[in-house]
Image (cartoon, rainbow, N blue to C red):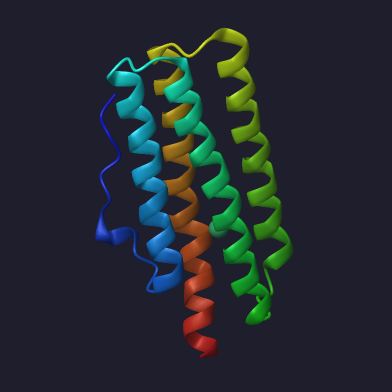
Length: 135
Ligand SMILES: [Fe+2]
């Protein structure tokens, strides 16, 4: 599967958020590469664990920023994050249950990458606009 190319059109203008978004792109691409290189289940699990942990950290940090600025759409944004965290947890379970085939990793990474791009485009840019107006 083709890797996710970072595109500056995804920048929100909030450096703390943008840096972590780039790191998430890198993490999903690392997972794809690990599966591509056929490094085995342990390497894939390690890569997926990093992606999962970093996603949780990123959501937490982003929510802290929202609270700091009194973001009015905070509750909805948290709901989107929580729903996606459940999806990521489900991805990990599927890999454990079905075994880490390249096809499954590709499918999971596509789900992850597509969600992330869509979430940045709509929700995170909306948040960044709010912070800009508020600052
Ligand atoms: Fe977000």
